[in-house]
Image (cartoon, rainbow, N blue to C red; front, side, top):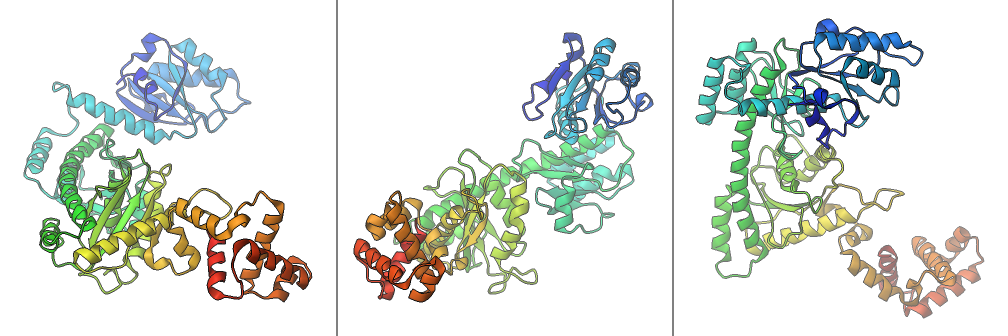
Length: 523
């Protein structure tokens, strides 16, 4: 990998401050992050140097920057990547010093972490090595041979990880999922709670195993204690684990095809042969005799293909049940659906000591969303259903309705919908129930129920709508409505009469009150 390759990566968003063709075509052999004033003795030839510039202050003279860059040149560093966060930019004296010593200098924006640069270099470097058979490996030959054999035999990830780090003295090591599930650990590694593991995924001692996977499907190699070993060796271990991960992803892809067939049957339950076909489809997905079943539907971004990965990762936290994740034939882009077998659980529990499936997933949702924070992620969960075509179709309808409700909910004081999970059992109020109705249907109902009052560009209509809202909020009490609006009771009577005349409703009737309350909620 060369220095110029870093500038081509949009994900890093680096800016070239100085460097000509000879500097930009230098090959990178490694990365060192340092904020020492004289880092020379810790550098090796060909390394990229990352510095947050904590060692420099605006009051420092030019000589300090000169000494720092001279040390880089003497050690054979190929380039300096200077962070902008400490000083809001890169000092010009440092740029000039790099120009004099022939060291390329690139600025690193605040939103790009040094770890992202390090991971990019070493993972790209591994790719380069794998394409050049003559290049030396960091792992001993006998270890590489054993790991290759274990991969071919389809060994479990615990064994693979343990054998991969045995020659390092068997340090505590983990393979963690994006949301903190422990997929594998060495015998010396104590159990790691999910919450702590989710934080460990972001630690500097953690390495992404398969950077090409979606953010939700990522695995991470985590060593909680420093290990005296070349970084390249850890990246080779990560690549071995990545090969195991890719095999698992291929199996997941095949399982999703079977799940999609199952969902197609659930969505069209009217065939006479549907019960038998449903039984075979459930068996093919490994869900036979696990009823009752819960259905969950999740919606991400329309152009994002990681929604199925997100749902799969979330459901792996339900350790006591099977599930099948696929796509409905009628699904919108970015939508995934799953059938969850719940027979091995208590009637409402998760089998882990308390809480429902919905509670478990709701607690996990913020962590799941944080793995791809720019993508909204909503979900809807049904109530449990028996293994018949009609009841599972009903559960699917519930899940999709709850999904619509989740996508309609807005954060307080914001017009933007919040990303979250809604269970059908959450819809216990009229307002909550109405959120599951598609927006265009809600709008149409509000317009027709309110009649002329739906035109709130008319100041008189806005006044009447406000009076109606307060009147219904106070359970039809004339006195409390007048007090809340600072009006005379006769004025309230007049306004409500006008509302009744314009809407054709009688506010002495409970059903008409409910109609208008629903219409106000649908606006």
